[in-house]
Image 1 (cartoon, rainbow, N blue to C red):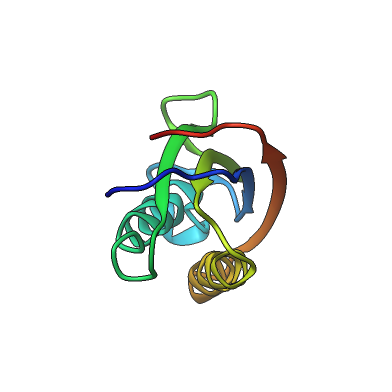
Image 2: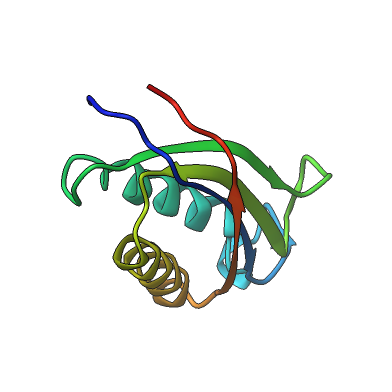
Length: 116
């Protein structure tokens, strides 16, 4: 990718599903699986949506080895973003979460990052 991005936005996604014991995953809504789908879909956007650089920098969920967590958080940065990209990304995230029966919240925060 060439050029210089002058705008960047940090995003923070909160996914809410339903916790369950790992031996009974059918009783829960697995936010780790949902988060994985969201991350894969987000990484498929650059190059298909115009000049856009995207990075996932944090995924956090749960605190037990045998329990599916109820919530997960994903954070990252998007550079070269337009209002159209923000709407597309927000719609993509909420659609994937809803498709699995979970809810999502996404918060955008401008940054002053630029890259060459």
